[in-house]
Image (cartoon, rainbow, N blue to C red):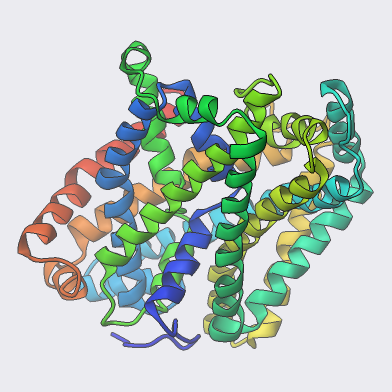
Amino acid sequence: MQTTSMHGMWSSRLAFIFAATGSAVGLGNIWRFPYTAGEYGGGAFVIVYLLCVAAIGVPIMIAEIMLGRRGRQSPINSMRALAEQAGASRAWQLLGWMGILSGFLILSFYSVIAGWTLAYVFRAGAGLFEGIDGAASEAIFSALVADPERLLAWHTVFMVLVVMVVARGVASGLEMAVRVLMPTLFLLLVVMVLYASQAGDFAAGLSYLFTPDFGELRANAGDAILSAMGQAFFSLSLGMGAIMIYGSYLSSHASIGGNVAIIAGMDTLVALLAGLAIFPIVFAQGLEPSSGPGLIFQTLPVAFGQMPFGAFFGVLFFLLLAFAAWTSAISLLEPMVAYLVENKGFSRVRAALLAGVAVWLLGITCLLSLNAWAGFTVFGKGILDLFDYLTANVLLPLGGIFIAIFAGWVLDETVSRDELSATNGAVLYRIWRGLIRWLAPVCVVLVFLNAVGLI
């Protein structure tokens, strides 16, 4: 097998950690985890979530990075080569296709939503939120979503930013971007937490997130555990080819397990810091913390409009969201670009433009489903909601299941021992192998069955 990728390599362990953490940290991670933690018992849910990360997220992420580093190619070509090496069916390359399809569909609607964050940076800066109430905030959001021309403009701007990074390659594009964006994201998050501690009800925010309420957890034990398992899987950006392609650029001497532990820790830290930045502000203004996605684009603008220096910190907050979306989006486009370079002989720039335009065109159907095509549904869902459902509830869990099965049952054990030798002692390796063969796939099957409404 190859020891380096034709696309380039991460120059350091830190670059890989920043890139993989950037892929994992996204819009849903920032609003969904803190809200879910509060809903299911605060600190009690956080404990369950961390156990699920250790039992599900970390083993599957180790497996996905290991497969990427061993194959050193796009997910499709890596899975084909690894299957051939293991004497298994070439049909395993479909796992790579599934990941690329997931990334393609997710990025098409993710770009539209990321465009909202860019639009809100300018709305906050223009003082549009000053003194508004809930009805006015809802009207601002509804006006944006109902305007296909504005949505198209912001969707286009965001995709241009993504293509610009990916077209420059691993060293000059991906690595340079994450080396700037990730420290900036953490800095903005810390500034927002400090602001929330002074201008918001920080005690209420801390209590909401960290006070263990085991009674609330026991009362909703089934839903809470399934939610924790799903969050542990989805928050680490697994099953969509992004982590696999990033693993293919990782040095053969780097410790996979050690890096994954840091990435999972940083991902969880960002989610908790986001909660400490958001909920003290929400509680201080007497607003509803359980408003889901609307928390970001409808509830928080009201809070920023009522608080001192709200316009300035509103800009910082939506800029933080935009950076989180950007680092995730480049990881979604990269597997498609790598495949086109490897299999079609395209230059990096041509491949990035072609993949980016394809995503952009599909994204137009997503944004139109919010307004002009609102009456068009498939299985009762608009295009954006359909893509969201297919990826989150079907493709990603299936991808995680098959990654675990391939790494634990198909790949020769000598290969996994060789790849993880820099990571694990004999005991840790046996723990990982037991988790990836038995517990992780069973748990993801439960997540899948719950997502499609079968349990």
